[in-house]
Length: 422
Image (cartoon, rainbow, N blue to C red; front, side, top):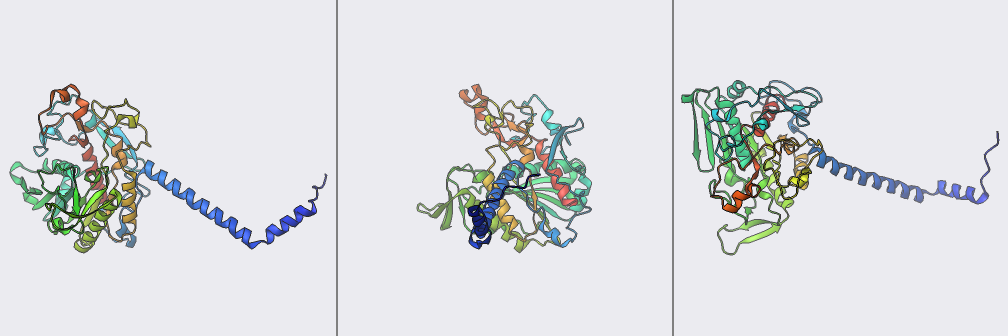
């Protein structure tokens, strides 16, 4: 066997110098370290886009104490937000005509929707199964208590879904629904239980706080104003927050520093959507820390509800949307452009730095697949439709809100799972 060729004197000298140079070694180590950091950041951003936000579901679990309302634990390794949609004949969980509390903006069958397949999809997590929704358990657990949904019209839809899921087992004379300005209250009288909804699309005080007249394009919120609404949330035993849709103006967001929304000249600053949203998230967490007892209360935050305004996002024809869509999106990595990745990252940043015990309902990815579940044109219209609109249904299809029964019942099945089996 031939011995390996010997190195030249010059190369040997270079090798010895390289080995003996602490500066060069340190430089190379630093370059490798930076490369690893950059790669990890890119990978993290891609992972967020495809899989949604991964944050601690409940920071209070650190001390292993039993959470309020919990009766068991979920299966080991079970992430209920990762899964697939399975068609099931036995669904929906209730019929549209059985629930008199659904607003006409969400009653798709009453307004002529010809198909019903969107009602039959059940969410199946990959590594486990969701516990069956138990209305009796919810009502017994809420005996003498309040469950409060706070946020925009998407959270109102989840509130109505919860009412529909519960009211079926309550006698007609033992339940009521009343509205007091921004607050709507469903009461299960025999249980002395209240399920409530409070209109606060930004959580902070804003110029869109009127529960009826709030269609404002020039949206403004007041800095440090969460107590304006928060005083109405005190005493709730379970709160489910959401806020997203109203922040998406596509322009810098206006923050009122002092004075009134009605002032001709306003003391305002303009910030990015992400910075404005971060302001609201931090305010919400401070309010929760000051007003909710983690040994008695539970707090949830529902992630953004996706829209389906551009069919090109899922490989459809240009200039189309959710109108006439009757099938779900099959691509498990689908993420529509209407769902802001940067806002999801803000939620992750703020929540991960907070010690406030709050459970995150990550409904964005699983709802993104459901382009078939929107109200589209099958709803009460606020204004008479023009001949041009009637000739082009795509132009007035609502691809933001969801038919009931439908997708938002799944949100409440997930809420049920996280409440009782955290």
